Amino acid sequence: GKKPLMCATATPDGNYLMLGNTIGEVYKFDLRMRKSCGAFKGKTVGSIRSISVHPTEPWISCASLDRHLRVFDHQSRQLKLKVYLKQRLNGCVFLNEGIIDEDEKTWEQIPEAEDDGEDSGIEDYMSSDSSDLEEI
Image (cartoon, rainbow, N blue to C red; front, side, top):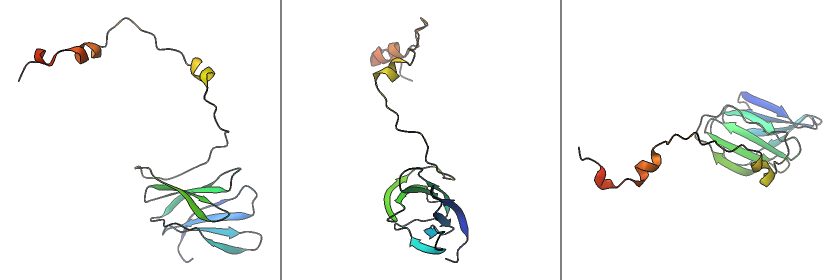
C-alpha cells in the first residue's frame, strides 16, 4: 500500500516478511519472489505497533492502537484470536519456552507462608455482629 509502515518482522525460515502500517493493515510479503502475498483478513483499527512471529507454529500476533491483540495464521492469513487488553499496546512477543507442566510437585516446591503469630484483625471484623457497629 501507500501508507507508512510501522513494523516489520521475518518468519523463522526467512522466506516471508510480515508488515504492519499506520491504518491497521497487516501484509505478508514473499522475499524470494519479491511480491506481496496479500493482506490478512480481519478488521484492524488503528496503527499496528508490533508484529511477532511464533518460532514453531504458523502464527503471528500483532498489537494495535485499538488495544486489541490479534493472532493470525500466516499461511491462510485468517484471524484466529482477537483479545481486548484494556491497556495501550506497544509490543507483543511469542516466548520460546515450551508448555509449562503444572503438577503437584510444582506446587509442593512453593514455600508455605509462615504464621508470625500476629492477627491481622480481618477475621475479627468479618465475624463481628453488625449491631456492634456505631451509627454515625
